[in-house]
Image (tube, rainbow over all chains, first blue to last red):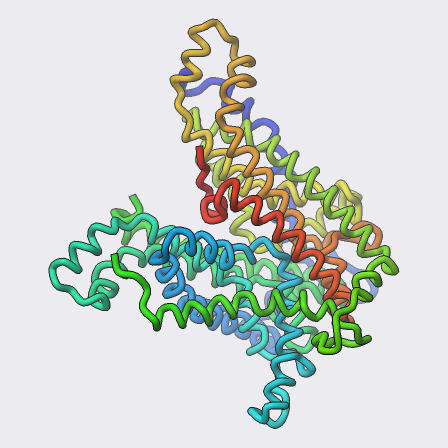
Length: 287
Length: 266
């Protein structure tokens, strides 16, 4: 197999996938952007005339601003918690003996493959008003009334942190794998305290992994659906559950599409900018 | 190399408790003998597992989920293998754009994809149909399939293929007997990761599923929005156990960290 510059072969090889992605990804996404400029009438349904009505409605109505702001606030808090606990845990894992490391890596990353619906149910069982932890704390006299958890931002944040934690661990773990342990040993042999080694040798090298983990967690938290739908319910809406309600309950598809486009554009801007910054600043480490 | 100190191990223990607690509690509560959610303090009972049989919609949804995952992961591997060969082996105008296009479903929130597919399928008459679910799933799991097949394709020693050519093998034979064999670990692990990603997908599917054609996670989500009862705990417990078996097998075969990071062991 030679490497001819332009021969039909690569186009033949991508011929099955390309039309599928153009027809069933690019066109539906473009149609969604277009849909956000249509209007909706309770009796006529979708009216196919170009208007900025939905955009103006979302920009001017405080109800939508509150939901979008809440979405970003939850995503920010989840990212912070994942950083705070995920980074040290990944480091601790990397310091374990191979046997234990294998077991605990499975324990920590495995939940990624367990349905998010089942994992969220676990939090509802633990911390719901009749939940096991809440009842136990009341019985032991730690608190008088059950802590509000269902339908609260705190509940969504805790459950989402659990759901997305593996992504943070994975990203930090990957950059820890690239470290040369001899550099750490060199610092130790030169008399650096373990804390100094951590702060001045290890941490600077894993910053790209930490940052890209944070971007992934933030993006997934801001667009998460199942966990806010179960824990937040209809009372505590975020952008994705709002879009869902507009589509399947209110049936105002153009408005729902506008929410979706806002979410998509916000996240794409954040992801692409962050990736560019990470690549530019840490290009040597990533090589 | 310094080992973890007592503080680090205490942190680690709490961390593992945090990760496992919600998963274990589902499995424990599923054994309750009571008619409501509670810890099984007065003995274990299988009544809620037997109750699943009275709700055939869960069993139908489980079967449909398996079919959907098997079909869409097979189709996406079928698209990913030739695409990976093109991207890994050739430089051609549009190569980077195509690679970015095939990986892009990773960057688009699934709720946006769900909306886009719902609108599109209702326009072309595919809404609520199994074929629509398959198409949508092929798109969202393609990045997982492609990433692992690509890693495998980049990793092979091309001299083996050249040797086959010099011994008189035609392109089709080289592909079937040499290349495909060499990238097999990537193909199999890509298929398995795609399968489980399709099986677990809920956010996009909830938009395009219909009451007749739906998947298990969507059925569970809709049930949970109305009421959280021991039945949903037992269904979840079954799902957790089945998935755990699958992920332990995957971990033994490939290592979960490599699999998620898109690295293939040769």
